[in-house]
Image (tube, rainbow, N blue to C red; front, top):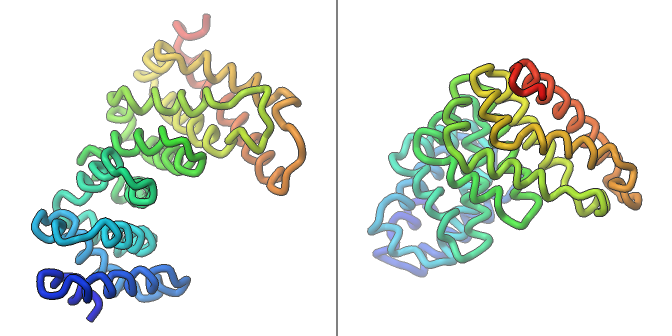
Length: 277
């Protein structure tokens, strides 16, 4: 009934708003994912609303925000992710929303959906093929550390598949964004202000790309080696650790993994003779 009401906004806008709000509340429940068939159906309905200009024009700003939040919860399920991708032009809609949304919450919701699709090994290529990299790059450029970490995580997952390496390198914004995330880390800032998790995912992406011998020279030419060396200096510097915090142990684990991936990346890059100088 809620889904039907959402699809008939032209009959009753108020009823549709209440239905969307109720659907969002249901999606927030921890056991919402147990009903994968319903999640898939709801995701399909919402995706069709997003890409249909007439249907979308009936959505208020609040309803769009609720609809994106709802999908952000439902998309944790594989069936929902596949249902979303099956609707033509859904990924470009999310990209457009990330690029143009004035509401930070709406942008975050759309960005998280792109991330969720990108980290699915069965769907990552759809994100690339339908222009999702630019949306992820913009999402990664957000001031929020959580968004940076999520977007870098998406890039790391995409880079783990051989067929994605070339398009990731071909999009200039991807490597620029990864290095920009890394440059935020400073020696004179406390661990709580730095973002080792985001840096870890960014370095992991570079390390994955450096596995491919035909990409090593380009990675070096675009500043990867210099930044990786700086990362070693930053995170090996005791002053970077700052004062103890509640999540210090988790942060230290991230730093240890970060250092391992940085060394892995440098070792792969050094396999290219021209990079050794």
